[in-house]
Amino acid sequence: MKGVLAALVLLTSFGPTPAVRGESIVPAADRIDDRAAKLALAEQLSLREETRAEARSIYIAWVAAHPADAEAIIALARLETWTGRGAEAVARLELPAPQGTLTPGARAIFAEGFMQAGRLADAARIYDELLAAETSPGAGLLLAAGNARSYAGRPAEALPFYRRAVEAAPADAVARRNLGLALAWTGAGA
Image (tube, rainbow, N blue to C red; front, side):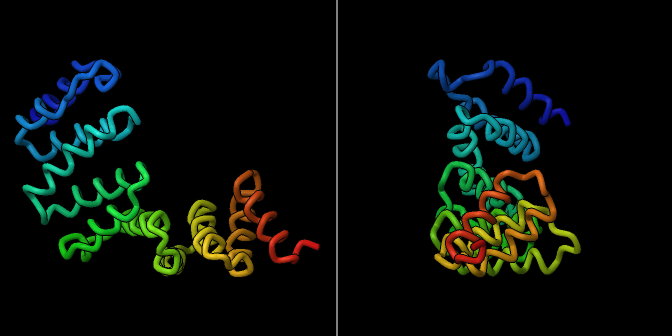
């Protein structure tokens, strides 16, 4: 706990936007040896767009020194999907260390990485596996499964997922829009 507190003090001492002031928190973070503290610091930095590069540097250094730390690999992969580096996220998650430890959340990150990397069939496969494990999946997961098919040029296959997403969240504008587009593309809405 002491290490986590030190990391949070370090983070807050830089104010809200260290990147704007041209300062880097990474050299100070390098002095933190406590795993929980270092990963907590990287997690906090990853939440703000202007400090995501700093978070990525911390995660990369930690993963390089601890290649079997699946939790850190997954956190880095999640950050990489947030910053449009889907192919890098997939490459990290395909390493042997995290494969046996992928939680449903990590598998969703993996699928998002596949989507960004253009590996839509792989993304659809993972989304199907996640949906099979859910008794009542949320609209977000259903939308993602539909998008994997729609982006691959198969809007007819996306329709059932979009319909279920609208049923799960009738007020979701994105779900309604995607359903409308898929209906228009397939002519099923006419």
